[in-house]
Image (cartoon, rainbow, N blue to C red; front, side, top):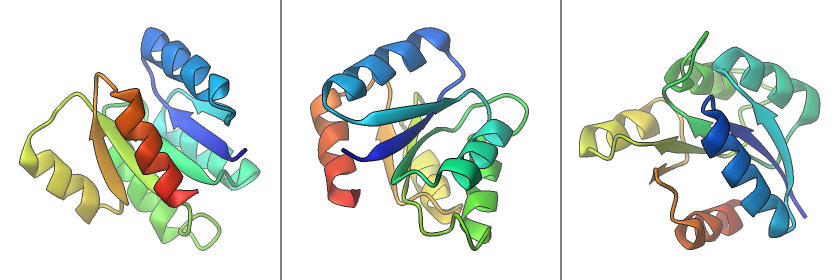
Length: 119
């Protein structure tokens, strides 16, 4: 199955989603902040990135901009994950380079459908 980079700073959310994705057969890499996400993406070339937008060190907005600006990572699809479900956040996420947007708490069936559309 595809390798997914899960970028999430909340340990409980990260562990829960990592386990659920692994049970579905995905190889899950993790990063806890935006800078770590960039480093792991460059090193591992995942098939997809699930990007929390509210992150320490470097937020998900800026990490996405940098990933989409770099030749080696610009083709990796990024799905934004956020607890902020307002329309302007969706628009802002798409403008900064995210390929899709989903809300937390995660609806696994909906998220898996989005993941399958990209990988």
